[in-house]
Image (cartoon, rainbow, N blue to C red):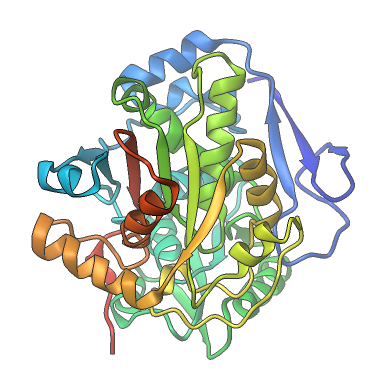
Amino acid sequence: MQMNYKISCFLCNEIKKKEICNHNLDFGHLDYLYNILNKNKIKKFFKTKNIKNLNEILPLKKKYDYKLPEINIKTFNKINKKFRNKIYFVIDYFNFSGSFKDRASLISCLFAKEGDFKEISLASSGNAAISTATFANMFELKTSVFLPSFVSDSKKKILKDLGCKIYEFNKPYSFTVKKCIEYSKKFNSFNRSSALNPISRDGKKIFMYEIYNDLKKKKCDYIMVPVGDANIISGICKGSIELKTSNLLKKIPKIIGVQSDESPSFFNQFNSDSPFPIRLNSKSKCDSINVDQPLDAFYAYKYLKRVNGEIIKVKDQNILRAKKFLLKNLGINCCSASASSFASLQNYIKKNKIHNKNFFLILTGSGFKDNFK
């Protein structure tokens, strides 16, 4: 299959021939740029949710007949009345590993197989590692994961059960990233770490193609997204831009990233108008967004600025309260990181005096993998 993409470097602003650049960095700086020629294939995906119809926007050499799981979108009258807006909970953990990361893990494993890799490795706070190992087992790949010690015991147990080789460090997330880079170079392991490999961003952008019909039907005005390493929000923004550029989406909803006040690195970076990552001590109890240096800070900044989005922060304790509220009152068992979107909702609506609009809150992971000591 003829490739219809180029590889761009954020730093040197050059088009590369392959996924290699001379910059010795521990965060993402490469991106795939596509020449979308056949929109009819993409339109088929809107109906089928089969990735064989997305070869126009993915860097895979082959077509794969794989249908993605359905995404559940729920709304509740009592919540809509309380907030005086229509609130849609986009519940994205009814999939293989219970995580938004599954689409990126699927595409990464397929890409690794095409490159004849035998092993896939990544730095993770848990969800991406579980997701990757799940698909790696399907495709007969070994998995090595690099974890900060704050990862929940529940996630560590699942990773052991999946047969992963686990390297755990009592260090910040950014340290595990460096160790994964060293390992993948030494042992020729496919490094799938968020943003370090640009395919992770392209895997996650698929989400916007999946909810395309709902965006139009429900007339979405705002999308609220939890932010840790910033790879999900960069993918959501990139997918939105592709849909808009292809004239498939008339208007991009306002995209709002949400960080914990105990892990506000990207919040500080974005609001200081800098494309360069800022490293800060992080101590959020929400392990999935407890990131001291976002790996996808470059492209999250670029794409969020391009769609006129914004980033806000919310108190860690309010996130944990929101998680409990969603489970007790709505039966939504999302992970604590996911609850950040709901935790920030009331203040955002009040501050901006928003009424009669439609909000999509992205719930990216299952609460069954959380545990707090």
